[in-house]
Length: 308
Image 1: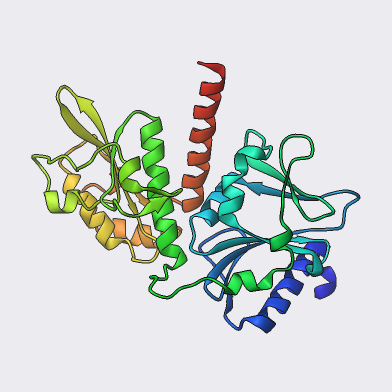
Image 2: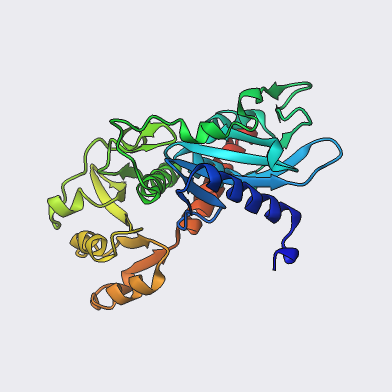
């Protein structure tokens, strides 16, 4: 069966085999679609490239880089033709240098690593010096986790999705709110992304339920804020609680409800228990939210560039 593997897949398997000799705790992260592994206390995206004539080329979508940078102890391992030429770079450093790297309108970044194993940046001769990251296997095990709460990937992804939903709402001109003010997305607390400091009180809803909905979009109507869309992110906690919270807005006929998860069967089972207004509920996958966020972000940037 191994004979049918591509060269790049073989490199990835060699990497995992080698890293397993140094760290027993190696497991794939199922909630992310990219090839990401939990290695000790680190989260590692594995990218591979065969030997080239000049540089090693890696195409990575913005959404993938952003998700990695928002995880705890995140790294990207670039395997350049051989596991003996592996560059293990903190994902946050890649994210911080994205503006120096070329990309297309679909958010696909063209990462090139030269023969000296430095990351090629925009501008003639510009490089990110990667000497400290070349074959530095120990960097994956050097994180100081004492007195730090270890977050699982589901917790991090939950915050990422909330941040993306807030940003989309802001792009579209809604007033946005999330109760999880201390959680961060792209290094910013959700409280600074939400346009509202507090959740508006509504006449026909339970405020204790309303203010705990993951993300809310409001629009102005006169001097009031009217709820327009409500979102609950359900990755590992089931769907019942989120649907129950959003149902407090049932008397507002204009409000649409959305459950964000990758388990559509579970969503269908739960929604069947709410026959009165189940047609107002929609299911969206985590990938769809990422795609929508990327598209909205690209449109905003394009509008800014052309001034229209």
